[in-house]
Image (tube, rainbow, N blue to C red):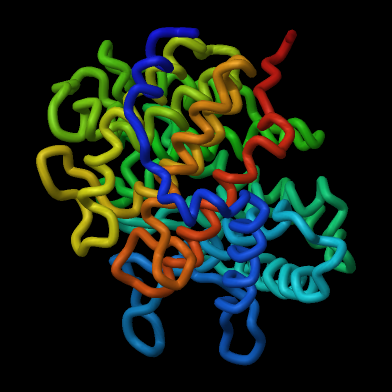
Length: 383
């Protein structure tokens, strides 16, 4: 057994006895019930909006931007699609059909089209997770009467992501200098899931531009420090190794970045293993910022919204390790997840009540990873 895993195993008696008695199925069934109960809408229950600090101007004042509404709804949709008990659940299918209609409708808005507005624009998050949600719904043959609309929306989403790539640096970022400056660095923790969405589209037969993928992969490689940390924004000429770039400040993005590189045939299992070791070793640094106000604060500039996102992708990374290494890490991740479960039996890493849907869905997706097929890899031309 590789040494990093032994170090992780020595860490702990973390699970609370009563919670540990609950199976993953128990947790997933309860999570499903909570998410169905939390679906909201003015006329129909149709969405699970992610709520954060950022707002946009709307007719009724400052509102949650469409990118967050679509992104949050899509992430919950991903969790509900694969949670156990689908065939015996009379509520889930209709709830997901309403969510699917909501996402498809929102994608018609100019605010979710190709482009970038000002210096901060979260539409990319909505596009990434809408693409993954539509692809998964299609793969499971659960589009229902909306199949034609889904089939049309998928290549359009691929085109939008490709159109908003930061060509000069490769990858994507929700924060740029005013005017959507093409010279802005790519955000590594956005670029990695965007690439995974494009890999999944290619796997289902949709055309993806190789040059876009190659530039984004290059930006991830360039952002990796010798310590194994990844920069927040890919700017290799400005690496410091401090704050954001210290390993404790990067553990929420290290697993997803290493997993994405591995899926593209450009990664390394040892590097992935080390990313997970860093995640568990410095987990308390994430925990210090969970469910607090503010964003990038403290010595490592950690924002609360990394927390459950990190657990989801750490779980994905575990499943890319050799089979004999996975179970001890699954148990360690599960123990951490149970440790931070809320009084409502869901999970929330923000101060906003609505974001409990996002947190609970991320945890469910983490628990589901051992049951899912491996994520799509990238098939480069000539492979």
